[in-house]
Image (cartoon, rainbow over all chains, first blue to last red; front, side, top):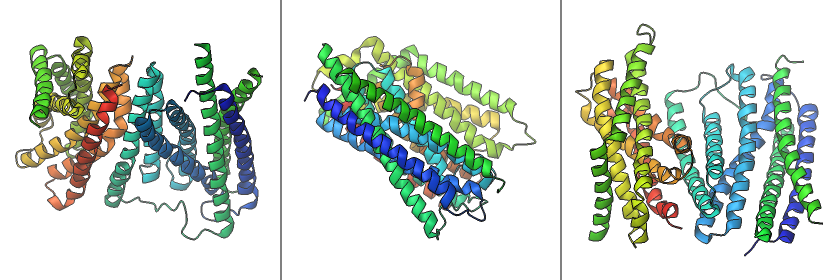
Length: 231
Length: 38
Length: 226
């Protein structure tokens, strides 16, 4: 089915609406986290980075999983729109993983005393970032659209299969080399205000993800449709 | 103010900048695309 | 089944024969491995960092990078000869082509490792005789893992402009589980630790190999076919 300009306009409109909604929700979370949520006694103000970092991680994981799943669909159905969606999700995922990779160490320095630690979370963040980056770089190096779509799908699927092995390896490493400081990023008993802010943070981050990915996908479809009309 | 407030501010600012820059560029391109075909 | 084996053997054999004749990939990888080992040896301060701590990492960094150099060359030969294109025109099972490529790549990387390992033993004065069977088994297990993935990726990256850069970039995340497992196990082997301390890593390595060889066999057609 050929992408049409009018079809893509509809998608872009949805994307714009969701993005604005998502960014507004994010701003609300900022206010909520900074002003209304109580200060954590032991960790201090830096603990509040939690409300930005963890939802971004959640969105990065959604983005990544969708790249993998849609890649499988693409190899099965060979619909170029699926490839456009996977690429959009990868780009958005890259953005979220940049946020994770920056806020993570900024959070770690005051809490753990070190910018970086090879714990499960940060290591996985780095791997995700490298996978997204590799995916995008590969795409930019291939000019034939069908080949680009196929190769991207291969990388997307293989990346998805890799993640459990990263988990396993880091877990085994950690059980043999326990952290000197116990990491309690999400305390087992979060006070209700903190839990609420975190959950709302997830909602905001998911909305932002949807907004970004739908808008990016709409732009991709629009470009595809324009290209078709010119030829 | 607790002494690690500067870290909190730094993280919040960095994240906000990334969201706004990326979101802003998408929105600009989206609105431009919508306007162009009218 | 017979013809499948024949195809795989033919693909593997052709590559190995070409490489044995030209020796380009093997030579550059061996030189690279020797250089890495020499530099590491002079770079460290023996009083600060003991051999036992450093040696496993050095060995596997050497294997990993020499492996990547070798993988790059493996498919570059195809590009020059366009032989693969011809092979693909025939209704040959793609899994046989993949396994043939995998075998030849394993042979190449294996040859490099066979030269690098003695050099490593020599330069780092590492006592390997007692643990040689275990070490060799480990080397096979870990190498199969990243060469399996590397064979698929090099088939893709050879068609891109900066293939020497693209392959490491794509492959590196996939080398993390095999390399972590390999280094951890090598450390324990050199320290004479009991098998029970290594079995966890060996299981992860074995699982990785099984899962990724299966996945690569299934996914390789998507790389070479339209």
